[in-house]
Length: 209
Image 1 (cartoon, rainbow, N blue to C red):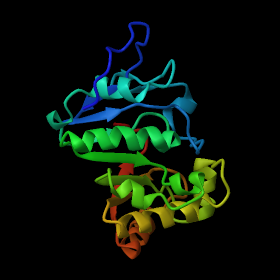
Image 2 (image 1 turned 45 degrees about the vertical axis):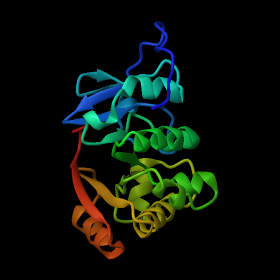
Image 3 (image 1 turned 180 degrees about the vertical axis):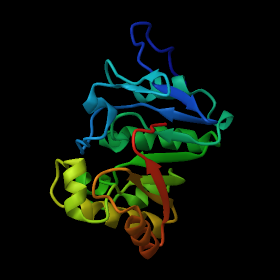
Image 4 (image 1 turned 90 degrees about the vertical axis):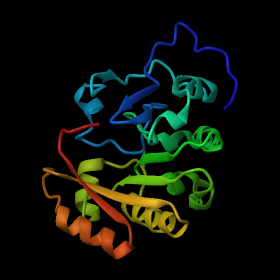
């Protein structure tokens, strides 16, 4: 693990938080999407009693310090109320340190890292990431745009392509969709996941964490 000085006293944001035997890393509040169902757009930053509002983005060393021993958890999961891969270089550095220490890495993501970076990043991620959970959110582009309000054009197709390429790179990949969102056909989403050869997980509206 990287040696680092203790997290500064004035930085009191929740960076690492344990839930169900995993440790979740909260590294940014920024996102490529503006999902209407996201708690932060409803003025709530709390997940499982943790206040995930960041006063600033933590450094790589601060994240590793907050995490501690990654082998104490089943998985270390990049997941706050922002999109982790917005800080792509930091994700790679943190994940690399976790893997070197013997931990298991998962990223909960919008699946738009390659679109944002302008290139296929799945080979790089495959070196340091074991699992991806990708928010598919809808069975077609129209429903996806209605609920996620993406900042980048072509987001839906890019997300599905990212999932397919990640699976090909050997990353255990799961697509997820939320039951209870208007117009979302969960069965159709599951069928698309099967078509792409990836796993699928049904989530429930307003259940976070």
